[in-house]
Image (tube, rainbow, N blue to C red; front, side, top):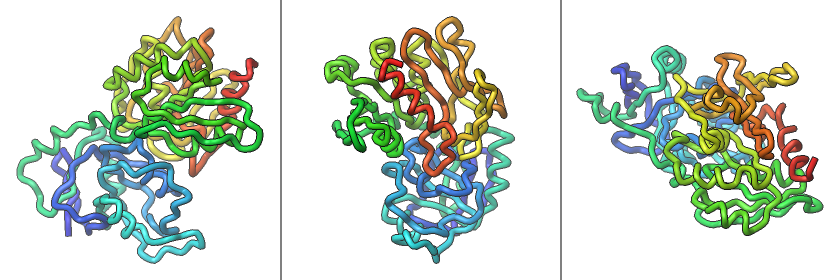
Amino acid sequence: MAYLVLGNGSVFEGKRIGYRTSATIGELVFTTGMVGYLETLTDPSYAGQIVTQTFPLIGNYGVIPADFEGKPALTAYVVRDLCDTPSNFRSEGNLDAWLRQNHIPGLCGVDTREITRQIREQGVMNAAICDEIPSDLSEVNAYLVQNVVQQVTCESPETYPAQGTKRFAVTLIDYGAKRNIIRSLQQRGCEVTVVPASTKADTILESDPDGVMLSNGPGDPAENTGCIAEIAKLIGQLPVFGICLGHQMAALAMGGTTFKLKYGHRGGNQPATDLESGRTFITSQNHGYAVDADSLKDIGIQTFVNANDGSCEGIRYPGKQCFTVQFHPEAHSGPQDTSFLFDRFTQMMGGK
């Protein structure tokens, strides 16, 4: 028996799963993905957060390491029903054991629909998973997700070869990069060198890549002042493609601003409308902040907009060889309707 206690005082009684610890505090968010719980659990962008799955049954296809997107960074995990008898020919174990091995505490048997409803109505809030209901929530409400990019970035550069003939060399700055970004570039003939978030622009330019990828990552983009300053030195020097946190920090580097969304976009069913063609794509997203497109007037051109709330989903910077998107064109598990953006990036590197 344990409890999920929200910052607004709501209490949900459930059963502990995963790693056993007396109390865990984090920012409570929800994700709407019907599949892909392994990718969610291993997405570094969830650093500092307690993740709630809206889909009720989790763990039914077990643990499949080949589907991991990175090292798990989330604070805790909340589900309605946890399957302890997975059935899949690729499975290498059950989810509860994996959560314990990776020191991820969790809770099951709670009303995840009501939890989601409260977040949607009141906004993202902090929460705690604990054995006893605290009488004072000041510690819970004081929690902040801070300095998380430094926690999830790689420690040293690593190079991944192109698949087939090498066409381009790309430097991927790792702010919490998902592995499928690397794979998506490799499939298009790119040799990918992944470098830590703290890497200086001069160091990247000295290595003479054909282009630079700004990866996804966790937390408030505005707190990464050092990274933003280096991005400002890269934009305009060579082709740049940014995803998620990379999109946000590129906007800040170009003089724009960002803001925190009420409850963010997390899941595989977010509609993003291409403002040029009018076509709406279903995209995978995981972010709590957004770019204020109006702050980039006369600097960048908005290319995509969220069809639900009108928030910015993409920016193109004329004359700078730079474009960025808020969603995940490399989404794994899907949808990959916007994977053509990687082709657009390679065409840019090819001078087209």
